[in-house]
Image (cartoon, rainbow, N blue to C red; front, side, top):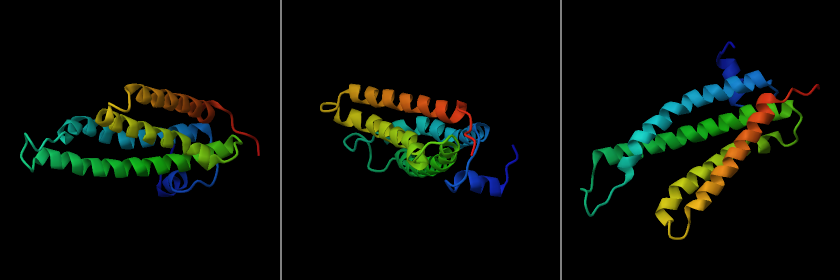
Amino acid sequence: MAIDAERIRFLYRTEQGRIDRAAWAWGVGALAWVIAPFAVIWLFLSPYTAHDLAKDPFFVPMTALAYAFVLLYAFVILIVAVSYVNLSAKRFRDIGWEWPVALAGLAPLVALIDGATRWLQPRVAEVMPIYWVWGVDAVLLGVIAWTVYELGFRESREV
């Protein structure tokens, strides 16, 4: 598939229009390639966010770097989520679902809630058992499976 600035603008910057399943799969793959390096870097930097002032000095360069990176990573996640919603809304419209933007936003919403529960649970383990995280994981897997089926395998609806 040829990619140029106009195609990128159409796929990711507006929710108007329709796309077929091949264009959706290509667009989601491109978004995955954008976010994958950030996720890998975060895996290496996240241990440095545990900072105990009782044991560590006030300023630890790797901790500062990790928190600076997480701000950038959060921004990238939000940009990718918005781009995904715009891309998926076109596909939901193409297969005939009503409220395409709301349905397109379901997977990113559940993914953000899943990330929030994963972050929060270790900090409040005495009031939030790990089962809550597993429950949200299950919901996320279900939403992802449903979305991939609907957008990746269903035929386009004739207009």
